[in-house]
Image: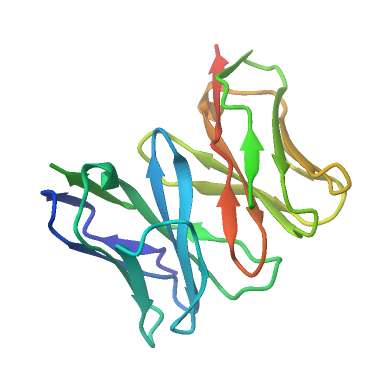
Length: 114
Length: 110
């Protein structure tokens, strides 16, 4: 099975712009979670989608949004980019959501905001 | 508040020694616990999951869970230089609301 894929792998944007990142989960996985990773804050939970519905959300401003499509692919959008949004954005997929499930990470999208 | 805490390290051990990594979490009701390893510039990869109190062994790795103390640990026996990485503790607070600790950086010296 192919793993989790994320596109693009690298992005450079300027402040004020918006960006859309894409994540394709492992085939058959219906839950997709997004994380932001920075050296100072570590891995922080953004949100989780299951069957096109956002079920969980972390403590990020409304500039961060996401969605999931019927094929389980997910996108996240960041509007009005700030310098502090520079980070590695990781998505992870899991088969379903019982407590015993595990998440598999994609390679990440490295976003640089200038 | 959903919190997962780890000693950030760095933790340095000689090759062949046991490395001990610790993690505490805030929600007593949490049921699923995970250890991930992350090499520099790479994404996290799952090492072990644990759901019941006690020890779970997989090769050189042993995860230990104590729900009463809200404590999870990872022991790495016969540590190798290739084990040098950042180790992330993760707790599934509820329905894939997964939170990670800040990670412990481990260095295994030859």
